[in-house]
Every structure is written in C-alpha cells, then in structure tokens.
Amino acid sequence: MDLKKKNVIWFVFYLLNSILLIIWGTLIFWLIKSHIIWDPLMFLLTFIPILFLIIIPLYFFIKSTVKLARNFKIQERLTISKKYLIASFFIAFIVWSLSILAFVLYLFPNAQFYNYNDGPYLLWNDDPKTTMTIIWHTKNPTESVLDFGESIGDMERFRISALEKRHIVKLRNLKAGTLYHYKIPDFSTIIYNFTTAPSASTPFNFTAISDTHAGLDPSEYGAVIDAMTPYQYDFIIHAGDLGPFVGEELDGWHIFFNHMERHASTSPYMVAIGNHEYGVDIFARNFKYFFPYNYVEDWGHYYSFDYSNAHFVMIDVFQNQLDWGGFLLEAQEAWLRQDLALNKDKWLFVVLHAPPYSTGDFNMHQKLASQLAPIFYENQVDVVLSGHDHITKLFGLIALKAGEAHTFL
Ligand SMILES: [Fe+2]
Ligand SMILES: [Fe+2]
Image 1 (tube, helix red, strand yellow):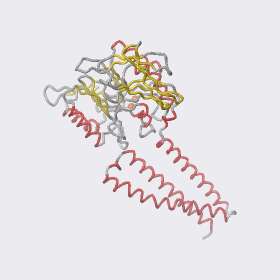
Image 2 (tube, rainbow, N blue to C red):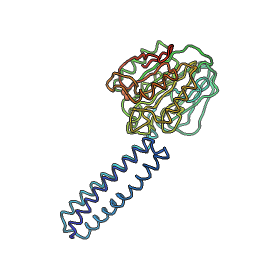
Image 3 (spheres, rainbow, N blue to C red):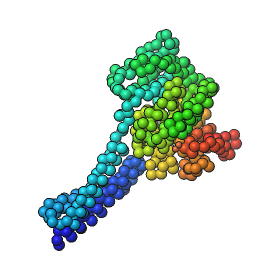
C-alpha cells in the first residue's frame, strides 16, 4: 500500500479515536459530576470499565498521530496527505485547547482570583445564638482586623494576621438576643450592627427573597430592599439565583455583592443554592468560597439552622447533575429525613430553589414533588419556599391528617 492510502487510513483512525476519547472523557466527567461513582457498586460497574476502555482509543490516538507525523516527514511530495495532516493537527489543537479550557473552568476554583473590595456581609455557619460570621473581600491581601462590641465606645479588636483577600471573621461566645456593633477599620469607616438569635422562643421576622439576579436591572434589587426595610427583619432567606450571571463569572459576583451588602451587612444572609450559582462551575466552588455555610457534605450544598422556635432547612436540588433539579441524591434525602424528624417540635421551613409545585414557565418538577412531598407531610413541614420560576404562587395543600397544614410558596 502506498503512503498516501496509509495516511488516509491513519487519519480515519485518528478522527475516530479522537471522537471516542471525547465521548469517554465526557462520560467520566458526568459520572464524577453526578456522584454516581461514589457508590462502590457503581464504581466497579461504570468507572473502572470506562477507564479500561479508554486505553484502547488512547493507544490508537497516539499511534495514529505518530504515524501521520512520520509519514509527513519522509514523503514530502504527497500533497493530498499533507492536507489530512494539517487538518489532523488542527483538530488536535482544538481537542487539546478544549481539554485545557475544561481543566481551567471545571477543576480550578477561580474565586481565588477575585479582585474586588466587597462586603461586609453576615451569615451563620454555627449557632445563631452565640456566633456570627462576618465576611469581606479586598483587592489585595491584607490582615483581617475587626472591632466589635455591645457599645460603639467600647469595642474589642479581633485580628487574624495572615494576609488574605477573603476575610472570614467568626465571632464566638456572643450573648444571645444581643445587639452588637462592628467596624472594619482598614476597609470602611461605617459602623454596622447585628443582633444574635434569641435564647428562648420569641416572635421574630425574617424576609424571604429569591432570584434577585442582582444586576440585570440595578433598580430592582434596591427596590425590593427598600420595600422590606420597614419590617425590621432579623435575617434574610434567599432561595437562590443570586447574581446576574452564573457561578464562574467573577464580575457578576461583584455586581451582586454591591447590591446585597446594603442589607446583608446587618442581617445574616442564608442562601439555598440556585442553578445560577453553578453554571460551568459544576462544583459550585465559587459559591462555597463566598458562602461558607455549615454544609453537611463536600459535594452537596445543603445545611440547616435554628432560629428561635423555628428550624430552616436549605436544600441543594442541583446536586444530581444527571437530572438537574430533578430529585435529591440518597445521602441528601437521608439527611433531610433525619434532620426534619429531629426538629419536629419546631416550626419547619424548607427552602429549595426549584419548586416542587408550580404553574410557571419551568412547570412542575414532578420527580422533586413525588420525592419530597411525602417527606414534608410525614415530618409536618409548615412552609416550603422556592424560586426559579420568577413568579409568585401560593399552594395550600390539603393535609393528609386533620390539623396539618402545609404551604408551598
Ligand atoms: Fe432565576
Ligand atoms: Fe433558577
């Protein structure tokens, strides 16, 4: 066989194996993303065979590249095969560029390159009665210095001497139901305040918002904050979709922080993750970087907290990347059942981004409803708060047992 024909065959091999590699690579990527491989049986049945199978196309991919390169060297007069070679190297360039891009986007947490002065904002990742977490971001690495106290004239200094761009100060051993003042001397001249959760069962206000997409129209989030101000709420519940873009776009986070710090600097900001906190950032690393809540597991972004006589459960409905917003994976469902059962004596609020029931554009999340509604009934959840659909709907569901009322908002 002459070299020209051989080159055509090697080129076909090259193309086929490139495609196979992309398919296997994508499969591995989705398996990791969907957490399926963490189940030992699934790991044996799927991940190992794929790793094994990838060796074959990888072998032919390398072999065909080497052959084509060699033939190119010794047979310069074969102008047709040169075309194949140029095309094949072009494809190789695209494949490898996309791989590198994927590596950068998927595996590299880019929030470390966040270059804005933002905050401060508050959140709880521990007992709301005795702790408060204050976060702010600086363009350049600096020490974290914060003054706080019950009176403006008599503040205590908190200092972390490590140089950081993300400053997380967690105040502990605070008094319950107490007003504290704080300021960040190197960052701003403003004196902020916050109040810790009450020690006993006390009436309280909280505000629930969602899908601020803050930044699409600068007046929108501001108007919502203005409308809420007279109610003097103790904390903010956000059902996800925070900023104008998606998780990996750092500029969008900055726009969002510019809006939210207006009220999050004095009221803790408690978010149930939305789809816009993911985007290409499939592990929501940026969200975790900006909102270090007390997550139950590394891969999911769910947690719960108490305030007065109420218990708030913040669910991650996008944890299962094979069925986005479709249902919860086993571990989260088990945790949800246990967490609700342990807190039955309190008012139960569940916050999840995609609504189990809706008549909006995204419609009902049937699987979510059939998985979660029985759990909510069983554990007498009082209110379910969702977003995602950008509409307001209130569903009062007929109780299975007399005296039980459930509201899906
Ligand atoms: Fe949204
Ligand atoms: Fe959404």
